[in-house]
Image (tube, rainbow, N blue to C red; front, side):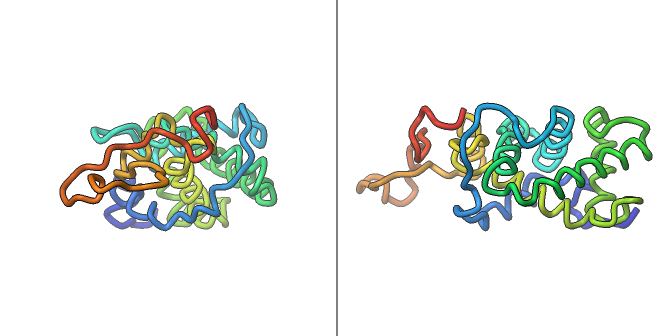
Length: 202
């Protein structure tokens, strides 16, 4: 297995390193049609996505992780809608992830312990997962979608309870900012509302 940097999955992928790149997620990339249940992925594929996301941004003392934030729901929705063109390749990546987990650890990826899932992700990220030549590209893509699902507007399926926004200190969308909100060292009161209204997404 290839040696990985300090903030990689080899040490459990730190929340700090994953969230640090969340600021570059473009708004245009988080558009999709709202749906109530997984549609692009099978139940087993959805479990793999959820388990993958759970290790990319795990729950810790700072708050919930990507799984609790509904990142897998978001990913399923974009694959059913705006990103439908990449669904086939994405599903192949999930199948290769599961096949590698079964070969190396004797069980489905979603059934592995956190440590063993981290080991699988380390190999995938590092390109050393046997039989999975596109593993690095797949890791990068699912990591990106996990970030989008954790921190995008709740309308799109992720960011349940606005937990993702709380993690990065984003107070929510606002049409106007009053004088009190512009004062230095004053914490901005969060706006618990989707851009599309409170009845959207979940």
